[in-house]
Structures are given as C-alpha cells and as structure tokens.
Image (tube, rainbow, N blue to C red; front, side):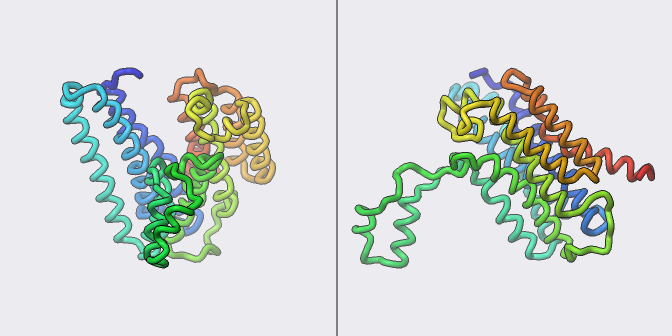
Length: 312
C-alpha cells in the first residue's frame, strides 16, 4: 500500500466528497425546478451535505486506519490535517442542521431514512446480540434457550456485503432518495402546475436511479480483481465476468434511452454512459471514473445553460 501523502489525504477526505456532492447538488436542483419552478436552497444543501458527510466520514476512517498503522511519528505529521478534516465535516453538519431546521419536520425523517444506510454502509452489526436484546424485551425467560438454538450466524451483518445489493442500494439512495428529500422540503403536490419540458418527475427518478446504479457497478468492474480476492459480492463478481457486466449495463442504459427518446438530454447521457462502459477499465485512472459519476450531471448542466440562454 502506498504511503499516504498530504495530497492523497486531501483528495480522499475533502475533494472526493465534494465531487460526489456536486452530482447530488445538480440533480436536486433539477428536481427542485421540475417540482416547484425555482431552485430551493434547502433540499440542495441537504443532499449535498449528506453526500459530503457520508463519503468524507468513511474516507476519514480509512485514512485513520492506514496512517495509524504506520506508527506514531507518521500520525503526528497528519494531526493538523485530521483537525482540518473534522472542521470541514463539522461545517457541513452545521449547514445540514440549518437546512433541516428551515424545512418541514417530515424532511428530517425522510433524510434519515435514506441516508442511514449510507452512514452505516461498512458498519458491522452483531445480529445475535441485537436478537438477544429484542428477545429480552419480549421473552425474558426464554433467553438461554434462544442463545443456544438461535439460527442467526455468528458473522456480523454489513450492508455493503449483501450479495449484489451494493450498487442497487446506492442507486436507490441517490436516485429515489434525492427526490423524496426535495419533495418533502418543498412540501408541494407532485402534480405541480409548473411544466419543465422535456422533463417529467417520474422519468427523472428512473433515469437517476439507473444512472447511479450503473455508475456504482462500473466502479465495481474497475475493482473486480480485488473484490473477487477479498470476497466482496459485487454484481461483476456474482456474474463472474466484467464482460457480462458491461453487456448488462449496455442493455440497461439502452432500455432507459429507448424509453425516454423524447428527452434529448437523457438520450445523450445514456449514450455517453454506454461509451464509458466500454472505454473505462481496470487500468483506467480512478479520476476518469468521475466522468461516469457525472454522466448525468453534465447533461443537466447543458439543459440549464440552454434554458438560461432561451435556446429551449
């Protein structure tokens, strides 16, 4: 493993979360405009800060493990960076709290439901312990028998270890979750009088969910060899072939494109995503996979620019 540097630390803990958050910021902006006809800062801030916190905290934990393993001398050199990273995350927590306080109470509940899996992504849960606690509340006298006869595995439960579900969870959280957060914050009927042609809310949700899921699978294609060795049950590992995975991704993106042929921005985004499926591989620099992450954002921004210039 390469020795951590200041640049890799800043990139991992600060820059990468911001890059990921930009995609949610763009999508939440589009949904805000589709639903209400204006850009509301509250859901945009909620979606962006949640992304920064989920990715930033996860990467910060990884950096702590790697750097602490190198000894106290190396750890001291990174002390200031750890403080700055925590300040950065604390500022995002503050902005998230402000945005939630300015939104209807339902927004906090919706945000918690869709972000909880992201924050607990790699957290191991002892199902035997949880089961024992629940049984203790219900059948206090049955504890010993449950402990001996319980069929629950001794292995801790980790969300990202659910076979084949990592990418699907990510797509649902970042696709459907973004819509529900925006909708809850705006507190408007889904059938708004505002007409944001050529978009419709349902197609944006489907497109977003599929796009985010496919991007996550593409990163799994990149990490196929490593995931197979470590036993991470991603979709490419389950299919036992990056080629099969690319074919599936192409078919799915083509299906979305054909379903929404009337929307040139979705068609363009799907074509771009399909091209990246066959261009990017395990030897491609990780930074190039940001194009896959923003295969949706790029075309939303193009739409916004054309709308601002009265070209639509």
